[in-house]
Structures are given as structure tokens and as C-alpha cells.
Image 1 (cartoon, rainbow, N blue to C red):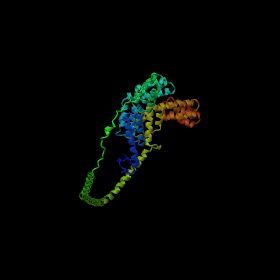
Image 2 (image 1 turned 135 degrees about the vertical axis):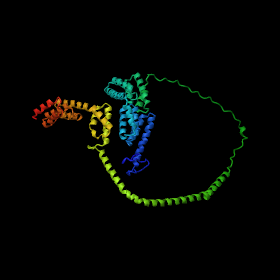
Image 3 (image 1 turned 30 degrees about the horizontal axis):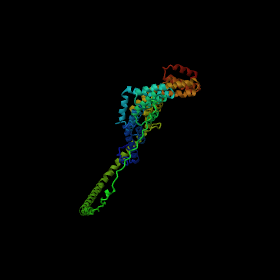
Image 4 (image 1 turned 45 degrees about the horizontal axis):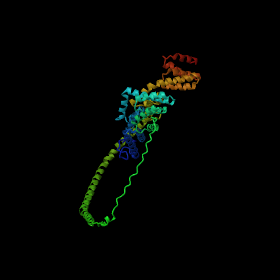
Length: 475
């Protein structure tokens, strides 16, 4: 167990950190609860109670978010349910908290090492989202077609199976109800306690799929048992039986027990007790001798301890300076912590894997690349940026140009500035920013953007137009 204050390695039985003196009583209790819920989730996952395992593992992470074993297992459970995005998110967070000797790195490589399989996962997520959208808008037939492809590509995608079964149930046809029941039975083997699956199966069990009425069983008439008469007994046959007499207990066993106890007490008094007293006296002498030797050793060591005090104090001052430097590195200039920045990066990566490029770009825009110290994090940042920023800038430019064309110059300027944030080389957005300020008669602002085109992008096809607008404004 590591101390939450100084991160020193401390034995789990310790109540206080030997390094910094931090009280570990409550922290040890929290870590213990996290491990209890992790073990519970592990036992539930082994018997395929995946829903229960997810609940237990989430509780484990609520008590201790640094429990990488629980987070890795939660990712494996998500993968078993077909939730690849959730699984990757948990493994990426786990790798962030424990960069070395972490099984999450192997799990991520296992997914990324097969590009065809990764593309298949992406297709299933896109098709599932499209089918869900079609179902919401009343196009059940198209949704069923898309969901059939999804369950074929990923047979363990529980949510897709449940949605397809629900659409089959809504049609009301007997054949479709049979198909729905088959789908639900298949996924019930993956997660045996999924409440949604069990509820759908309960609804289907209440309906007679074949339309047959239950057969009436013939009533069985019970026969009365035959009455038998007891044989007649001659009362004179029992007159010769002698009465029962209880024997008196013997007192000899009791006397033997008392004699044994007396003999035992005598042996203890004459043999055992004197020996015990002799041992106690010897132990007391040994203890006094050890105490005397310890006092002499302490007296001799006191001078050496005093000489070491100054060197230890210097080391403590050096550690305090290092701690201040580390605390300075934790917070960035805008007040965000390193954990906040990496959490934003992981959230952007999750949106990108879910094919939500717009949210991925928005979340990535708030991250300063210079604050990323890890090479893997920089690689993820640049990949998402290269695949989303240019498209986002073009989309915002189209919106800004639409505002400009309708005469809404305020919203046009606001939207075009956002477009330039995503792509500083978007000359079209820069030009219409200048035009927007020119329409608002803010000529100094307009001049800044036209000068940017003329000076920074001399090969652009907007240079001539920018020069003509500068001439119109008298510059």
C-alpha cells in the first residue's frame, strides 16, 4: 500500500506512515473496501453475473480510483458485453494511473494489433447508433436490417441483441417472437443476471407463442383406503408381565473423578508451579540484563545521533524543495491539474472512437499540447487533432458564412473566430472575419485580418481581394 500523502510504500497493517507520519487508519479502511468489492466483482464475473460484476467494480473504483486491477477487470467485462469503447476507456485510464507493469497495456495492444477487428468494432458502433436513430423515428424495418448486421459482426453486443429482440416483440408476429426469444436466450448465457434480458424473457413467457390453449388434465378420483380391523386381543394374556423397576446409580464413578482431581492438583502444586516460578525468575533476570545493555547502548549512540541530526535536517530541506517543485508542476498556468488535462484527453479519445468527431474536437481544443509529458499522450492528441480539427474548422466556416450572407455579422464573426481556432490557416474564414468587421465599420479590426492574409499567406487566392478591401477602407 502506498501513502496517499508522500506515495511511500507502507505495510497494510501500519496505522501511520513511517515516512511522513500521515494517519492511514481511514485510508486503509477505504482501500480495504475497494479490494472487497473488487473480489466480489471477480467472483461474479467468474459465474457470468456481468451486470452484478459491473456494479461491484464501479463501487470498488468509487472507493479507490487507483485500483487498476478493478479497472482492468471492468474493461474486460465491458469487452465481454461488446462495449469496446467503454473497455478501451477504462484501460487507457488504468494505464495513466499505472504506466508500468500494467496488464491494460497488453489489452490495448490486443485490440489495436488487429486493424480489421478494430474497424469491425467501429462499424458495429456506427450501425448500432444508426439503427437506434431509425427506431426512434419509427423506421423499425430499417433498424431491424441494420441490427441484424450488428449482431452478426459482434455476437456479444448485448445492447444490440436486446434492441433487436424488442423490435421483434413490437411487431406482434409469432415468428418474430420466436426469434426474439432465441436472441434473448443467447445473450442470457453471456450475462445471466441482466435485468433487461430477464424482463423481456418474462414478457415473452406470458404469451403463448404457438397459440395453443393449455390442455385440461382429467380429474383423478382418489380411492378411499380400505378399512382394516385390528385383531382381537385376549386381555388375560398380559396378566403375567412383571412391573419395571429402575436400577439405582452407582456412586463409584463419581468417587473416581474426585480422586483424580485431587491427585492432579497435588502434582501441579508440588511439580509444575515451582518450575513455573523458576522460569519467571530467570526471565526477569534476563530482561533486566537486556535492559541494562540497552541503556548502555543508548548512551553510547546518543552522541552519534546528535552528529547526524544536522545532515538529516539538510536532507529534509532538500526533500521539501523537491516537493514544492513537484507541486508547481501539478498545476498548469490556467489552474488545471495534470489529471484534469489527461481526463479531458481520454474523454476526447472516447468520443473519437464513438465516431463523434465534433465533441472530440471540442474537448481537444481546451488541451494545451505543451502540458502533455507522455509521448503516447502526445501521439493520441496529434492523431485526433489531424482527423478532426480541419473538418471542424470547415464546418464552422460554412456556418459563419451562412450568418454573413444573411446579414447576421455578430454571429458570423463569433463563429468564424471559432473556425480559425481549429485551423489558423483557414484563409476563407480569416477573409470573411475581415469582411464582417468591415460591415460593422470596425475598420481597424478588419485591417488586422486583411493584413494577415497579405503578409502571412501571399500565395492565397484571397490576397487580391484583401488588398482591394484595404484600399476601399483607405489603407
